Amino acid sequence: MSHVLIVDDEESISWALGRMARDEGHEVSVAPSAEEALALIERRRPDVVMLDVRLPGLDGLSALSRMQPLLAGAPVVVMTAFGSLDVAVGAFGRGAFEYLVKPFDLSQACLVLRRALSDAQQGSNKSEPLSNDLECSDFLGRSAAMQEVYKRIALAAPTGAPVLLTGESGTGKELAARAIHRHSLQADGPWVPVNVASLSPTLVESELFGHARGAFTGADAARQGLLELASGGTVFFDEVADIPLSVQVKLLRVLEQQEVTPVGETRPRKTSFRVVAATHRDLRAAVRDGTFREDLYYRLAVLPIELPPLRQRAEDIPLLAEHFLRLVRPVGAAPLRLSVATLEELSRRPWAGNVRELRNAVEAAALLARSGEILPEHLPTNIAPLASVPETPSLAAVVRAWANERLNQPTLPQSLYEDFLKGVEPALFAAVLERTSHNRAAAANVLGLHRATLRKKLNGD
Image 1 (spheres, rainbow, N blue to C red):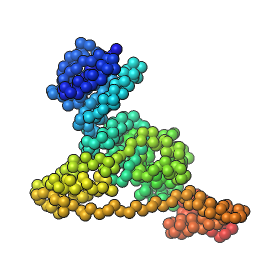
Image 2: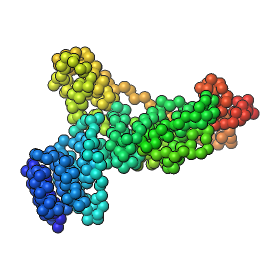
Image 3: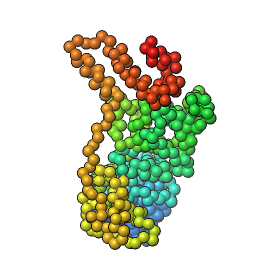
Image 4: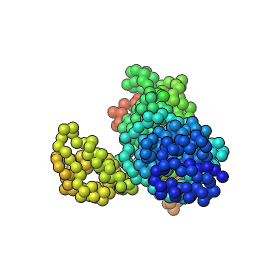
């Protein structure tokens, strides 16, 4: 029989949890305040504590810090009806075993209790407290979907493991990445965001890994790459699916060996950084298409976190809208408020652009209303979502379709590889030459060919 201490000032919650724990065969003690709980713990150490955050007097998180030295490793399950990222990070940072958001099913609480007791018996509850002054106001939302995001960020932040953030455009992936960095062990180190799609295709390796003086035309001085500059901090790869295949293999080597080799050098340089990557695309589909390396995917997706679209957490829209209104209204401007009808209209809309679109809509409405109430007519026209533009087929998919077309002919081809090269090489060379202003030396460097080889191919030799 184990001893379970329930700390909650709501009698109905304490009664329900107590009955559940007794039905499991455990002895139960109940305390309506943190002060009474601490007194009980001093008299008799419980095997598990179920602790509410909002308590009269000393709050749950402050009490958790004071309980830990008395509990000798006994797990604490934190409960709250007012979950936020700072509460989740604060709970796990102070050594909480688990985090439950009210209202929860008793079956869910029962499973958590069983797991806590099992881990305690095995001696595996070894959460190390982090800093007690963690704060975050980047995320807003009381929905269950956002509570899960808070929990995952709080668990991921102190580990140092790579995190992959997925979700539609506008869901806040960069905000999540910044929160992970701010609450990580690398928080005092550099934060280096890398928007892969914005990097020049011809210079992406130089940007990431750096280059030696004279490594290529225009490299008049040696330059450190972004990955070396990020040493001791966090690199955020935004739209990681856009990393060229030729760079993916080198990036994988950097992540595995923790060293970079600048373009034009042979001696690697040591570096150490945490990786957070983000994409709105399905990386697993990209792996199947052959446009993203499977080994790199698994290296990046150690801790995946999916950001929910706004339509899946519509209950957060009024809270977000009020928050954005406070942000966009200039200091000293006339008071503005969102009418009930406007909040209802905002909650009905589909928000294809997610939180980013909602913020833009609130800002536009505030400019039109200027003072008083923001009415539904001040909101941007609720147009239908933009027709989805089909993604450009991957190179692997195009080649496969081309090959299948020829292989389905009545007579199998005899020189398929040669036909393929004759079809793609001229187009590839033309595109690269156009991009490099017909500088053959630069084009050869981009293609990874010797200048003499490129010259022969262009001459048809």
